[in-house]
Length: 72
Image 1 (cartoon, rainbow, N blue to C red):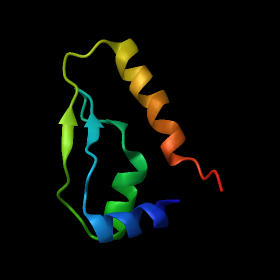
Image 2: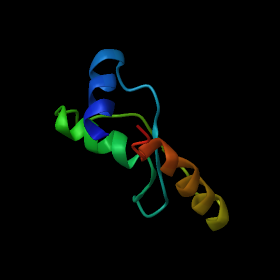
Image 3: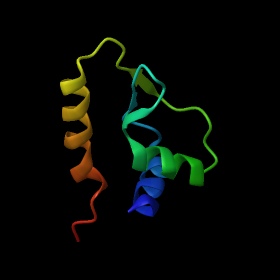
């Protein structure tokens, strides 16, 4: 799945930001970050989620999971 995301980033660029929490950890976008690393990309769009309630962080993590699943 990461390879498919890498191919998409290579063709279309980085189109969806990753979400980062107050602690600097990724909330969502893990597969996109792995794909970017494979391509040697060191700068990418990030959205900080500082001050967001923990339940919203948890919901964002859950919502991002289906995108990382290989549902072929």
